[in-house]
Image (cartoon, rainbow, N blue to C red):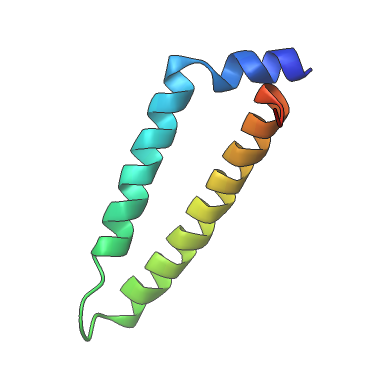
Length: 69
């Protein structure tokens, strides 16, 4: 199983996807401004939680696929 995960995490599409998600996360966090509407604050908080979960899963997959060495 770890060999399949290693192939996945070393694939170019995986890296590109993670980079795009990092850029989207940065954009989402950068859109905060003074006295913004509550719906935007709520959306940003939800997006931040979703991105955090995705990045945590990416870390776990990388640790399984590439090992801790």
